[in-house]
Image 1 (cartoon, one colour):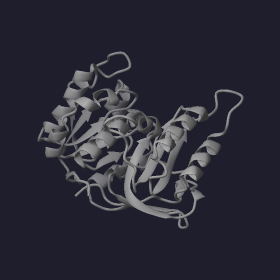
Image 2 (cartoon, rainbow, N blue to C red):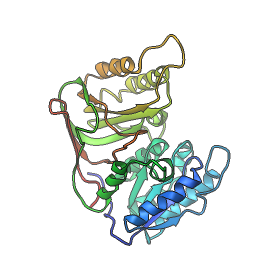
Image 3 (cartoon, rainbow, N blue to C red):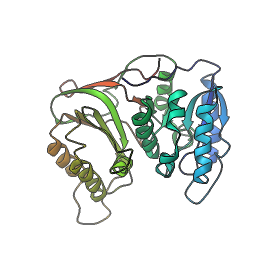
Length: 306
């Protein structure tokens, strides 16, 4: 059973870090108003505005911000400003014992998938897969529904995916339950063979991605398939694959690729969830129990806070 972090209360302080690429500064600034509307205070990591090529500062500095926010007793939740690339570079240097001793809400997606996987598997802490401040919430056209799902941090309540939100498609019939794990496919594939290799045994596996052509999705799903990660899962939750279109004339379609590996895995699978690089983006806790029923096209996920 995972460790649920404490819920937020009005007046709590949120720590903001950029553990991957440099966030869009205008969007980040705009997102503070949303946090204030929720009744929260903002504390910025020392290196949030750092730039080091495609990274938001040197590895040691991004690592320092992560450690500082988990150690800071005033900070009740750590929210990532954005993704991009870079969390895998600091994963092996994180003090997981310290995080285990100071459990709190941790929120992000995309490149943050590496941290979700590493933190949960090393500490048992339930973390949150959801839209980030500079990448999503601070955009001028940010979707109100994406914002609404932040409310799950204030009150323990299970989440039922709103069926009217998107057209869900059954790939393989059945019921499946288990701990929910996963996130961005590129990052999940990059854990294979490392100390942070994704554990999918008996779990509901969520996958999503952006800007990867079908050939790349094929390569990554094949890697997960050959490593036994698909067939070991209890079920497959297929999120949004934004702009994953062929760049060459001769190509399989994305749907063909996903169907191929789903049928090889032969586990219940539902496709079309608004999880990932999309708007609205429904946020959910990772590491809690969830139940999926393809006949009802239903996904119910336990609360992530206590």
